[in-house]
Length: 112
Image (cartoon, rainbow, N blue to C red; front, side, top):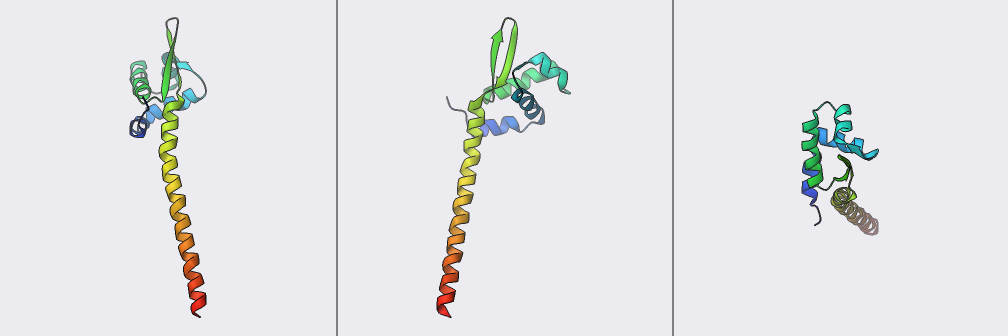
């Protein structure tokens, strides 16, 4: 099931979750390793990872008794698609304004 951009944005609205994601960009890590480098407890890291997992920003792999978390491209793709829509709209609006101004300048030159 595709993830919604709203769920991804909500998950990234928390500074600790963004920090976790930034650490996971460097490679898969277990909860304990993340807790060592973050100013939050291990249970808090686990709770944040659950939110990130629900938003499909991270996935988990069980190896023995450890759960390794890694960045999941699905959530990042949803975010990129969401932001790309804004970018395409902004570029289209800019082009329309530029064309309208060019046409207006042409009309003004003809009127002289």
